[in-house]
Image (cartoon, rainbow, N blue to C red):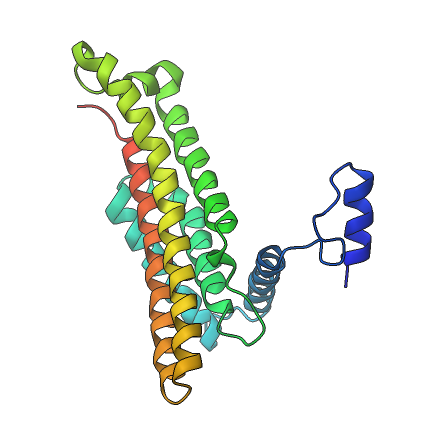
Length: 231
């Protein structure tokens, strides 16, 4: 729908798309659709908020909010509620992205490495920012050096490498699971079109929620590690 306009804009900016007829990759279109779905849910929820007679959507979102708050409290501890919007939004975005591929002709955005990597980079920037905010620049560097300054020369590069690997493992884990799941579903559905599709759809739904949970609990853990006070 917007291919011609996007191609023109990208060409004028000096970044001509590889495929002028389809300048917007499927995973980007999927992300935009998921964001629109979330915005629509928020608008509907806000318009129908009720204390006396809450609807099914409000009940579901209240349960999700309570689950996210309990997860944050358990993983982070004091002051955890300030991180609930980030953790909850990540979980909601990931689970809808994961399940979008169940709709015929739609793709699973998280089966493209760019989507999980983008989320992981955002998490990486956020928890390190929170660590800097809590400890200050020098304090955060000391935090990364560990409790004994005598081994700081070993601990500091180790911690830096560990932080980078967290970002990579978070993105690759989600990407690999959704990509392989989609491939297996396509292969076995083509071989055995009776009953097997339903089984793989159920597995896809389970994997979608599981990976979204992982993408909520690990950022909470990283925030906890970055903001922890030394004793």
